[in-house]
Length: 118
Image (tube, rainbow, N blue to C red):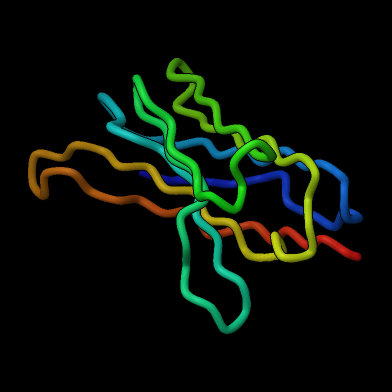
């Protein structure tokens, strides 16, 4: 299974970006997909997750970010509006996939840089 992100870049404060993430390979189902981020010198933190029935957001991004999912394409999106300099980080996509060998297994993308200038 491969997880590949795209859509990062440089944007001014108040602007918008849309991140995409596609999971590919032998996949029968995906339990959940999500976005995490890691700023320099900080731990990786949850941004948003989505299952077949629920979404979950970090308090810091509620009402600004929207996560959505295309199950047919095994793809998850993160629409980021009203961006702030503190949103600057490497954003990582996660896909939690059931496997026969390990149960639920977390697959990660390589990360995409989001930089918000003030």
